[in-house]
Image (cartoon, rainbow over all chains, first blue to last red; front, side):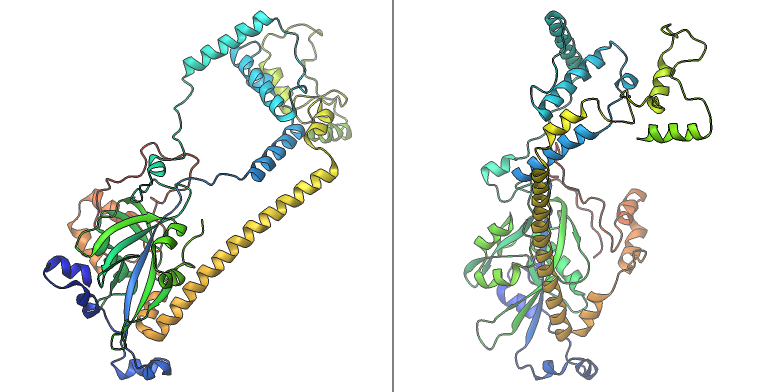
Amino acid sequence: MLSRTALKSPNARAVSLRRAFATEPATSTSKAVSELPPQSRLKKRRTVIATSVILNRSPILTRTPTLFEQAFYAYQARIRRALHNPFPYDFYFKQGSLLETRFNMEERKRERQAFGPNFVSEDVVDPEKAAADKAAVEQLALQEGEGEELMPRKHAADLSDDFKSLDRRGKRNLYLLLQVEEDGNSVWRFPEGGIEQDDFLHQAAQKDLHAECGSHMDTWMVGRSPIGVYKRSPKSTAEAEQIVFFFKGQIMAGQAQTYGELVKDFAWLTKEEIEKHVEKDYWDGVKDILSDH
Amino acid sequence: MSGVLLSSNRAKLAIPPLTSGRAYTVKGEQVGDPKKEIIRRVLYPSNIKNRPTPIGTWRPDIGRAIQRAIPSVQAHQTIERAWLLHKRHLRKKRDAETARKFECMQEAMDELYKLDPKLYLEANRSEDPRARSKAEMELMKTLKTSEMRTLAARIRGLFPRELRIPTDTPARTGWNYEWKPFPRPI
């Protein structure tokens, strides 16, 4: 496999190694040939299998409801409020207690919000008493310690466009993309590598991921079957056609670490951002595998 | 609602109706501990039908409230249809995406079958969650108890417990970048 041997012997040339250590399909034994569909016997070009991992950071945040959804939920809440049983307030709150005063104030506010400001009949209350009630409730809030402040939904990484951050774009699916040196050009692609003799495909995919991105990530491979395939057409007729099988992985913790001269950079990108970075042919093969949101 | 049903049952059995106060107290006299009366009133609403009760019936100004909540029958029906249409759009979009992904998976498996039957067979195999590979058995002999628990926690073929559900606001600590690697045999 490319990067594993590159680590052991740093002097070895990178590009030819990948092709050399990638396995060809098992067509040598006669038994295997007879089991195969007839077309493969007639195949003139060699094919080389490679595995790739589409590592996904699933959404951290829930989606924001659209304006229509918000309006509909508010409408349904108003109807529910109009129809539901009256609340047994004297069971839950002691008569004349501070908690009852607070509940009444909050409930009137909610009623005004639901049905309009002139729906709730104004009680004839002494303005001094009302002010005293309000002050007492505020004091209670201070005493109770209203609760810790929640974190904002937009992270600092969103504002600074830090593509390496795993906190960026919490509502979307992020995928790991690597920038590699290939025949002199730098190309963005998913972590990839060949397979060794005894490995199954999903095992080879995991080993490739560890080789190219390090093992400081808590990942989980979703099943043993590939989720997509891409045929990389060879530059010249002499070379073998490379068939890449994609496997899905989920990341739960940690961060990618790239080493070696081949892998120059990595990024965690959404589907639209991947389209901008990746080559057109590769994108057409990969776009249906990725999640839209 | 349920109060009406209860009262009709009691009428059939010829049992006197429930009263909120004790039978031997004079009307208007404080009983002392109103808790029991409150609980009784909450659980078994009074059967006087033309008076609104704390539970088991509508709120007293329900007519006005409904007028405010629902603009008109036609408006309500339009809103309902719009919502169902919106849900349909979302459902169709989701189904189309799932169909595209499934087609990619099918294409991949077809290619694999054409290429190498042995690998295809292995990719198709369903995993036994109780099975332990040889490498795992060897590793377990060398581990401490806590490490063995961490190793056994992740079950083959089932999703890991570290997968988080999306929340409304992110965690206070954010993403865990300093995760200590735990080598699992592949």
